[in-house]
Length: 264
Image 1 (cartoon, one colour):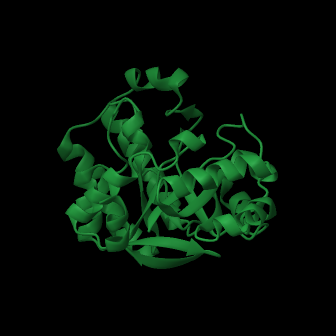
Image 2 (cartoon, rainbow, N blue to C red):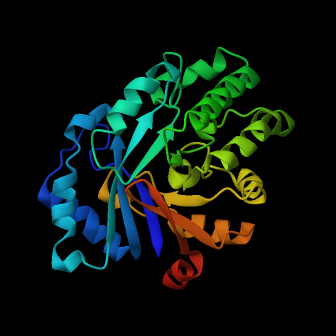
């Protein structure tokens, strides 16, 4: 039961939905022993998300073994909450990922803007980032926390003590919200060379009984499932024995033991 719930079929707008393009993703999922695939394009392209097309391809007999879900990844900003609420009500999404990509107008995870880390105190950057994540969680708009510690993407980090200080207050809020945290493997393909969240943070999530799901953050079929085996083994080592899937914004738990059989 490998799960990949962070899949960008449109990437950053380079691709369009088509029958053959979605087929390519689903065939790749089968080849990677992925049982559940969740398409979750950015809300920047919300008007181009074609749920019925995806469901139509998934209904073909050759894909009957796959659970195909359609969600959306939303770029959270506090001033957008009313807009986001309305947007999420417009289509029958299976799940909604909430992510923080901006600190004000600074898109800190964009390669062209990474020098912003050299212009401010790292502790202040982390504090602002996690404050926004906390507001996102408390907004009750989303089902999944996207790449929880994305702020580390370029390898700029505060001291461990300071990072724990920023993170600890979030854990209780996440637990009370019922939100799921994804283990996102795209960080393994970025300069930081770590999953989001780190194993240390994942242990804190487990200690607070916060559920997880998995996502490769694929922007092309070739990236689908990348790093999921490592993520699964890390989750198991930490203590997790189940992961969340979704349908119509409802979380469903699946045993990780079955997924481990598929990669053994």
